[in-house]
Length: 259
Image 1 (cartoon, rainbow, N blue to C red):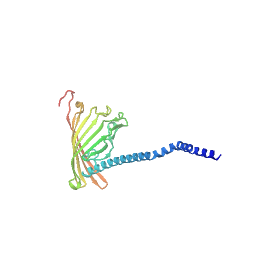
Image 2: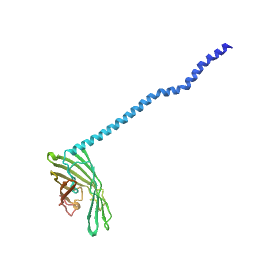
Image 3: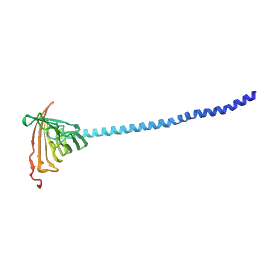
């Protein structure tokens, strides 16, 4: 009897070990895979952090470049009507209100301004908001004008302590996206020069250029434009005087005119 008991117990040992291997094998393999999974997750997190750091560094570099570009030019106020030759990062939206015929008032929302971004140490891009014009109370229906675009290239500049002057080339354009009442119907290109000189709290800013429509010159004509503003800063109060001249350079009544 004792021998049989011993034989049975020795036969159960390998059977129990085999069962334990079968039952615990998947858990052992899962534990073996954990370090690899943890390493992969850690590598993925490091990659994401590295990409986020690169994006932050790129944005920081752009901000530093823009600050350096603005530090090498005069610190003048932007005139209301005259286009400034200064490079800026800003969003500008102007509102105009002026008397019109028959007791109406004309409201212009936007003023051909919009988002201005410095894209290089000497260049700025403007993507404007189409101006919305409304005549109230008994005028025609309101509508949007054309889409304004502008590229600035600063030729020369100096801050106040080094000369206080500015010279910038402007290449403006309008895409014919406006309604028939408030749009031109054709794209218009407007090259110009913006220049200015400052003397202490007083400065003079001017632009001189031309409006050159891509088509329908019989209706739109070609114009020379000259704008000048004289801002004067006294503490928190500033005033300016502006003068504008826009003579028609070329226009004819027939579509087959040649210039």
